[in-house]
Length: 307
Ligand SMILES: [Zn+2]
Image (tube, rainbow, N blue to C red; front, side, top):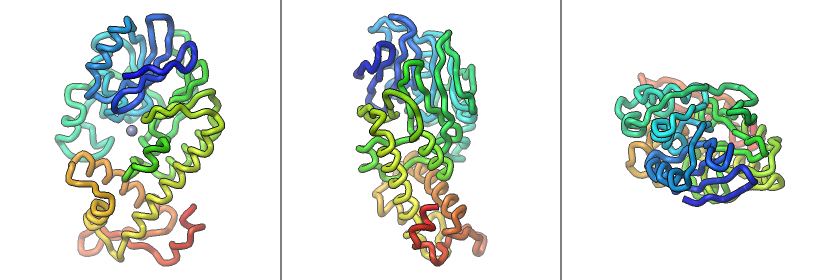
């Protein structure tokens, strides 16, 4: 756990699985932007206690377990309020609704969130600002990675981008980019390109991006997701079933047999397929009771694939 001061009031806390932001309301009171992975929740509480810090408020960029993992423990300990995106609150308050996030598995939500459900006090859905104890945070709704992902900017101009952008290291190593709606995700990246701030912090990775680095990073993220959906398109023989496609993707990217990773990849590949259908690159139809995907001719035209 490593604290990197960015301004006199805002710092980045780098944890093993994900980043959190700290905004100091006073010397001993903070607002947290995300709370890291559930596996690090106890270590985070211990660290905050050692630093004599009280968490007054938590605002989450989105509801994935590596960003809300400390919410339960911190809310129980400090009694703090929590603001998080609308829809994500549904499965964070009750893990039996985990199908709102990734899968219809009856047990997966419990496996992932366990007892770590928490009370959501404010749901974020298109608000442009959030008043926290007299301090004004700016919000941007950036759907795509999740339904209502929030980009949170502190009063002193540090933008916490969450998982809308991957850092350069992950752009090189990520196997399947996690999205729930790809068209919206592209639009969100364009929105971030115009974001005003003095520092830009991502959900993962230590590199803090400066304003003149932001547009290039957006370009590289767009290129990454174009490569991803084009890669899916290439794997489609006529009337390919989803299972056959997942098998081919598993072989190509070495996904292995981890069920959680399968579910995450499954959700993203379905988002790629929905996007490909929306731009007229594939046809989805039922053959003998089985859903199939077929690439349509002429789609190798790169201009069309840039739609
Ligand atoms: Zn995420």
